[in-house]
Image (cartoon, rainbow, N blue to C red; front, side):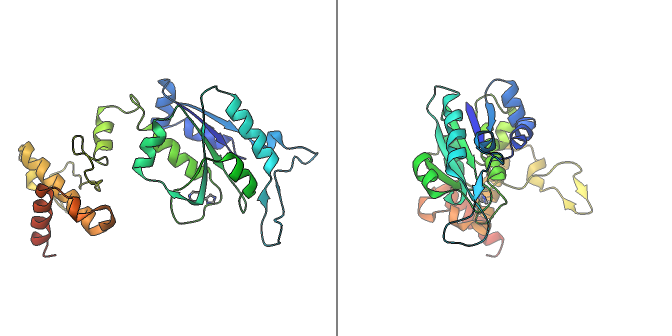
Length: 254
Ligand SMILES: c1cc(-c2cnc[nH]2)ccn1
């Protein structure tokens, strides 16, 4: 998979590409990451990339032409069709389903804005979709683009080792449970068994794999119910999950 990032801060791309799962995906030939700086396509002595907003108001707006030229250069760098995504608070919230969709594409171009944003005419003409990583304003789209790059890289076949894959799966709908709820992860524990901060739940020390799987599922259901009830459609829960959740709620006195 190829990801091109259009940004006024190209070293940002190198930072993301050089570490962890993204770096390893690059080393394994699973992902190539490229940066394109609109300032390289800006004209005039000052190579302007922004200007004052029509209608007045604070801040600056990114100009159409440098962005358009950088996008054209990115598109032309590879024959595969590219999905152009603008990282913006006005975008659709990013979720794991969208990450899975993006990870299945041959190419992705991530457009990062700065200042007050980008001239709307560029967005209308060049952008396929806008994505938000949350309801807050950042200094620019680069950190949001890094989130997309990391989340997508983790889903590329061969990017994760076995332990990492297992951890990743805990956030995915379990295989074979089509439409099963996306649940929050269960609690995790490691040595020591006894600690001033508390003990490890005995079931995890029991060696009873079925019992451990049941406890983990129940904890995920309970945690999701308590922290992100929006992720659970009670009518869509399996009978087994309903029983587990009811039991956990009763035990918790909820
Ligand atoms: C995506 C992008 C942004 C953002 C871009 N520029 C300022 N904030 C915020 C949230 N999700």
